[in-house]
Length: 296
Image (cartoon, rainbow, N blue to C red):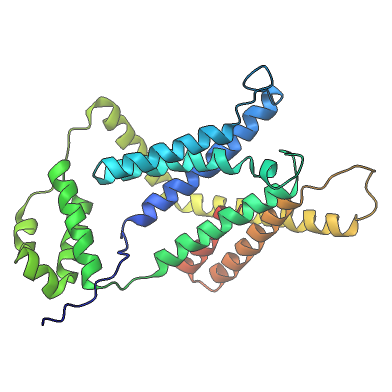
């Protein structure tokens, strides 16, 4: 009787970082957009005759739509679209958390904002924990190489995807060779695809290159660090003002604790990045600055 090796049930998608980032950004953007819109329009009620169609339902519908698209179609483009649609749906859904943790369905329940912030922070930490892992099994590399080959058959293979595919095929080892043979040389000889992007795509590409030049300029980094430091100083001043001013506010005056907490955390992360910058560890400093921006 042959002893077959136990295969892992969960295989990591090595391009999941991009998808999770799209999901989180879309969710936060949707939440902020709906709060801004409702505040601007005076919190209108959609429906009549005692009915109120909460935007939580729209969010749930978008999440179901994203799931159905993932189940029904193939390709990385579909996964990217589903990540954005699902993120928007999650943002609309979680925005109404206050209604479902209070007995009076209070949308304006202030601790709900803090809970929403914690949920996003936990999602972000989970995403970062996945990103930190660098060594994978041959099965993982092979499965991801097969997915990328699938995308190549469906769409194209741009230079970055070609480089990634070659790396994954080489890391798939004997398992990849047993299934696909020595396919890496054939992939290496295949010219990368440079699709015709059209006038709009060409304009977007020019804009992206211009933004890259601006971001690579030396003065841009200095301005960004100055802005981050000013924000950190504002967080420190706000925290001190809150601590020293407790009990002196007007009756009924509310302090936005979630925003104050977020600003304080972001300010602390910025200061850590500044320390690394002073120690001339530029890469670590940039990582902490990125964490500060995401925390805010």
